[in-house]
Image (cartoon, rainbow, N blue to C red; front, side):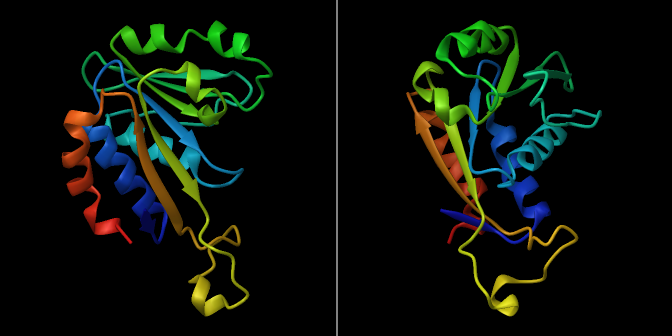
Length: 173
């Protein structure tokens, strides 16, 4: 389990994962509404050299962003999809296979059909009535702190897992 105190921490964990990501990777972003999935995607994209603003693709389902080099970041959002055939129609594996990396918000609902992937589960820390225990409340009534849990499905991340663990060690709780 990782713990970040602010948006910069979320971006730092995202950058650590982006630094080890390869074309063909699928990264599943899971967590409740407002947990920081899009913020994570923004930090991930910046680390890959995306220069345009990264926004949630809730209504368009997939946004594609050119990165430094020939890599493309595909940012998908499955929140509005009702069936696995809708997910299949997005052809996320094809996007990843074509020199791309795919980030999938709400991807945990279709994780079984996504093959090898890493899951990034984001959550607000336990709620508290004590403002001092919660930390400084930010502009949106949110401390910016998050708990982040990483897990891998399949073997694609097995050779990178030790490097990833070292890269995020400062955030381990």
